[in-house]
Length: 117
Image (cartoon, rainbow, N blue to C red):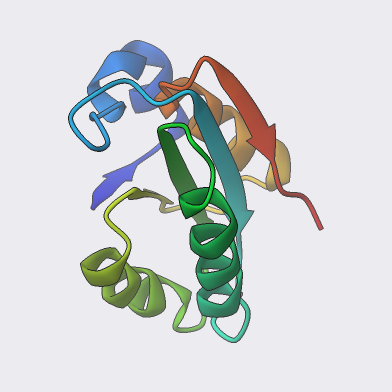
């Protein structure tokens, strides 16, 4: 689990991109999250179900944008189950655009998809 700010990601984006499944993913799913403790687990379960059926390598990057609830705890628990999950943490609330930018910088997929609410 990385704790970072926008400057850290911009300074060294490659540092935040770890391999998933031993190779480069075809697709990166980027999910900005703030105060989503009730929603994050069902979302990750659905993503895992759909993407696991696909014949391609993938990663899910959830960027916690200074959540004030138990979102980060739920993400820590989820990392034990979902091996393709990468969690980034922004300490100071920066908004959806900042969270997406951090996720994009960390993504290694040849294409990226974004979840927005």
